[in-house]
Length: 125
Image (cartoon, rainbow, N blue to C red; front, side):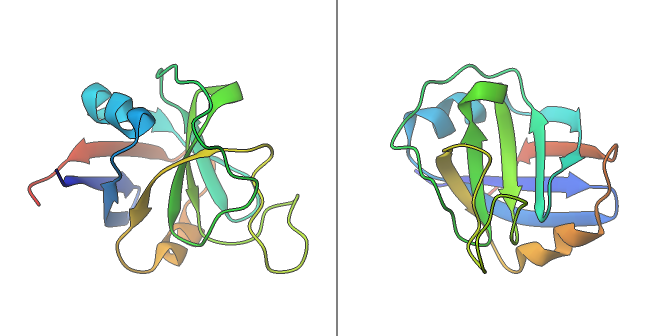
């Protein structure tokens, strides 16, 4: 089952898809979600009120990956290196559950500043 979503942050709006993981299912069930963005290097994250355990957590991710960070109960959008990265890798603060991917170029989120309202909502596939 495709779980198509739209992520809007200020002037930036992208299409994305959640995967079939248990964590992604919990996020899907909680939609729509609105929060204030925090930034950490080329990552946006925000608490979403979903409580999920580690599920095949990854130390590094790819540009455009969407993650869930268990320690902060946070949704993460990765589009480039973070302060923890070595070289060009993308390294979260600690391992994340990858829950989906942005369709297209996630670097659009580079325009988003801390404090910007972010909304994640379902969309028709």
